[in-house]
Image (tube, rainbow, N blue to C red; front, side, top):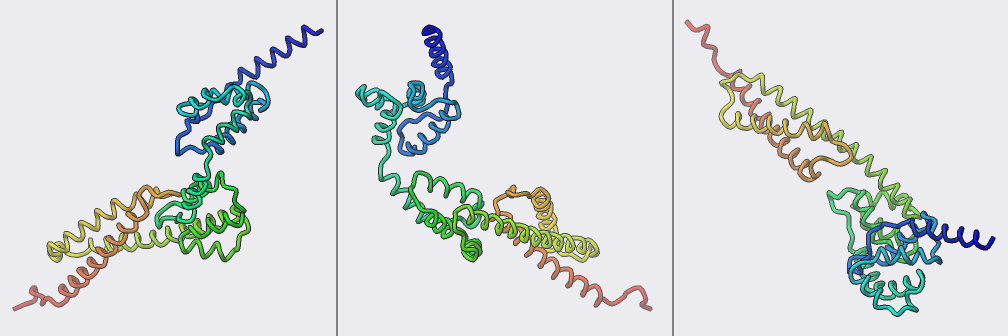
Length: 279
């Protein structure tokens, strides 16, 4: 009976040891967060069914150390690395500093969403800054809202969210509505440009001057390059938003110049004396 128990225990130990955990190794570099890394490691160990108080957990921790952190581990006395929790305490004490939290808080204060930065990128970066900081939910909402672009900031403040999740949902909704409205306006601009181009094709060949022909050519080329962007535009534009808006402004200016040229040409054609009825 005792032999069967020992054999079953050995099989269980072997089974646990065979569940290798593979995550990004911790090196102890300045840009690595030891607390965040341990959170991930412990979640993976839990999913593998490996308790933190068994030797297999310490084995997986050691296997996922590298560089200076691995060297530090080997330099520890045996009594400070005899279990997962002892080794964790030593590593956290060595690599988790108050300076890291202070730097994160300073970045939070200065963090602002760029005028053409995707809202999703801003939200992801804010979550990265919040991680590892013992911060109240109301403070997270304040930092998040303060960094939004002014139009989004006003809308989020109007809703007075109580949690970071609520603030994110409001910002995403408002941003989505704004994008649809902008897409509609841009579509209207494209239609006006195409209409102007169509009107330009009705002008007699001898009317446009060299300047008008150049303007017409630029307008045509601009439309050719802009239309695919509008056609295939989804959540993220294939060109930076700033470049897209600048191109629209340039084409609008060209359209206005073309309309002036067309009106002048039409007025000149009407005022010319007819030469076919003279005696």
